[in-house]
Length: 144
Image (cartoon, rainbow, N blue to C red; front, side):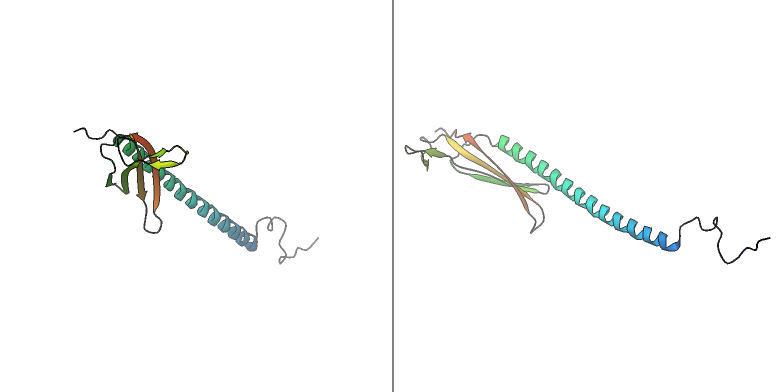
């Protein structure tokens, strides 16, 4: 008859994980979860910024449509909608001269076009974002 040593574990008792193996697995898992959390928070922030750009672009296009005709030579308008502040301004559109170089025509009778510039800004101070759209519009003027 063989004697069994009660101090040495049998094969059926040593089939599980040791405490050290479990601690190493927990450390690896916590590092992986930390990296995953940082990646997801960055993606969420980027999605938020993209949504703000889409909203700012829709506002700017709407303002371009609202101010699509200039009745005055040069003017500006501004406002605030939600978190977005906006500025609309018209400038004399550059006209090509005989040499091909752009020149400014101050007389509205010579230049029937105006440059319409819309700027939409939002964000906190120091991290302010600006979207700017420009187009050329007809100068209709005020008929006396």
